[in-house]
Each structure stands twice: as structure tokens, then as C-alpha cells.
Length: 491
Image (cartoon, rainbow, N blue to C red; front, side):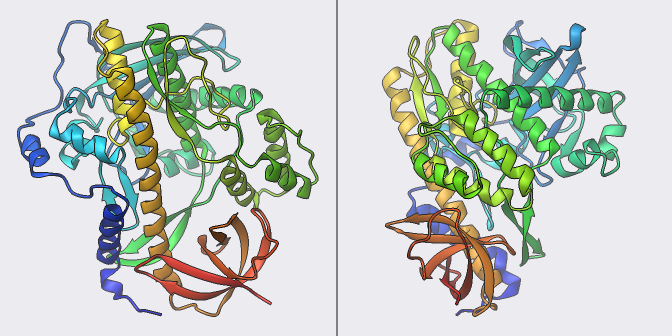
């Protein structure tokens, strides 16, 4: 067991993250060519033609994590007759600054995503862009691609449009404080009160988002909740891993983005353009999901059925809300990972099993995800009636590459998270914990303890256990450098 210097926790984790990125084939540092190109960028994207609308007067706001500085989208709502509403989602025009095949684009294309680790963020684009010139920052005029949706009283999308506009963020808001206010558990955030009418607008957004969610779940979208752990530092010392819970404000943004991503996919299809879709095919281990449901007193059909699975999840949450995130995690692991695929004009869509949507193209986070930047270029070309920015073979190769690199980035994030967890647990060798099995295969068996929410390998006593089983474990070893946390079955 090693001891790490408390004053250097953050720098140790960043060094570990840097090393693991290289091991996974990711590039943690920008090239000299990319940095030279960055020096030539003098300002944000400028309005290029008369078709760009001026929407700076609308009550736009951003809602993101407390510490987020790369702001990809703004939202706005307008009430309409018969209980309908117009929802606008403004997406940062990153392509206006980062041109295809530039050195900056090459770096983004290599990693395909920003990597968020306990040791710090390794952004897909330099911070001069992602947190400033291509970010929809407070009181800054920025170009955006706007996705407009008419949402009916029943949560169905009755009409949609896409266009380019200049926008201005009127309030930079954070998930937790907005959720606390929307749920009636806390005061209205000060930033909302300074903008006349923004409180009513956000309440309208919240109502529409809940209608969208209800409509999706009626079609079989899954009510999944997981427990994410965020590192909490005091200075450079890691103090704890804090549980990051789902809430009303996160749901609001998620529901709008799912709807906007659907509109983007259908817009490209209607213009006979190819698109890059995010899909989760039918579950890889439906048999084990059936067993898991049976252990909770529910019966699922033999063949994968998202509506039946959703009914089971809703009843399971009602029966045991405290443990529901653990059940959710088990189901997510058994569903299998998502992937990017190319949707050619006229082809039938594979769809996203967990979201119960057929049309789903990542489009709303071009500062931090390369597939969204690809989609933005396709959308802008379709809007302008221009040539395809990517041919079909290039898109197919990019879909495979983006899937692989996103998987690699998640592995980096998980491994650095385990190094942080090993830091916290290194003084607790020999202690026992309640745990749930999160993975079981030929490669090994993994468990997650509940407090703190940390995952590790089960080195002994794993015979006969499977995903979703609960057991008592004892911590036997930690390794900060390699991110290893080993348990054995207690008793």
C-alpha cells in the first residue's frame, strides 16, 4: 500500500490521466501546428450572410454543471395556443471557427471528445475556443445553429425548423440550484431574478420538457438513473467522491437535447443527406435482464421489449427508490454500449433502444464531441443547399473511429476515477462494505460499494455471482498508479 502526498493529489491524478491517454491512443496535448493556428484566431465566428437571423433579444439561458465553461447550447420557450409551445435550442457554431482539415480540426478528429478526468479536463478544442470564442458565454454575441420545435400539449413534436442566428446568453445557470428551485426545495437563483420574465420562461421550459419525457416513456424510453461520483478537492487535496444525482434541471436539458437530436437527424434525412447516428441496438444480455426482473418479482417477455422493461423499471423504483440507481446500473451494463453508425438516405434506422427513438444524431455539443461537429457541418450544408462536407466512405470510417475513441476516453475517465478512489481508500484496507455486482465475465468480476460509490475487482468469492447480485466484500488492496481496487467476498 502506497501513500500519496495530500498536497499533490490533483497533479498526481493529472499525470496519471496524461499517461493513460497515451496508452489508450489518445493525444493529451495540442500540436505546435494547432497552437500556431490558434494564435491566428482573433475572434468568434462572424455573421456571413443575410439569412442569419438576429435573435439576441430572446430570453436565452444556459444550464450546465456548476464548473462548466464550455457552453454548447442555450434554450428558450414561447407559449402557443392550445397548450402547445415553441422550443428553441441554440447550438454553438463551432464550425464557423474550426474549419474541416485544419490542424485544430485534426486534433478534434483524433480524440473525438473532451476527456473529463478527476485530474482535470483534456479539451477536444483549446480553451481559448471551447470556453470562449466558440462557447455561448454570458452576455456574449455568438453565431449558432438554432433547432426550432413546436411541441403539442401531448408532448409530440408537431413541426420543426433549422436556421442560423446570432444569440446572446442572458443567464449562466447551474443544474443543482435551478433544480432545487424548480422542485420547490430552494430559492430562485439570483441570476434568474435579474432577467425580467426568465423565471416564467424556465417554468414553461420545465413543463414542456416533462411532456416530452412522458411521451418518450409511453413509447418505451427507459427510466434509468445512475449514481455518478464527482471528485471534491480542497485546494489540491482530494477529500471525497460526491454522489452526482439526476435532477429536474438535468432532465429538462436532456429532454430538449434528445428532441433536438431527433429533429437534426430527420432534417438531414428529409434533405437526402447522410447522417451520423448514435444507436444502442437490442440488448446483448436480455436473458440476464429477464432474470434480474424475476428477482424483483416481475416477468419480462422472451424477446427484447423496451416498453415491458420500462414498466418493470417504474415499478422497481416505486418499490425501492433508494436502491434503484444500482438496478439501473445493472440494466445499463446488460444493455451494452452505444455506437455511431452512418444512416444513408432511404435506409431504415437501427434506433436507440434505451431512448426509444429511431432518429438520433448527436448534434448539441460540438465544443466537446466530434460527431456533433460532423453533424453541424452536414446540417449547415443541407441548410445552404451546398455540397456534402464528407463522402459516405469517410463518414463510415469516422463512425467507427468515433465509437472506438469515445470508448477509449471513457476507459481513461474510469481508470483515473479509480486512481482517485484508490487514493481515498488506501487507508481503509481490511474494512468491509456492502456491494453490488456490476460486471461478470471471463475477464473478471466487478463490484461497486455504496459509500463511497466506488467500483473494484472481486478477487475472491466470485463463483456463482452475476450482475445485480448483492454481497458483503472486504477491501484487500489499492494501487493509485494503476487504479486498482481489489475486494474479496467477506465471510
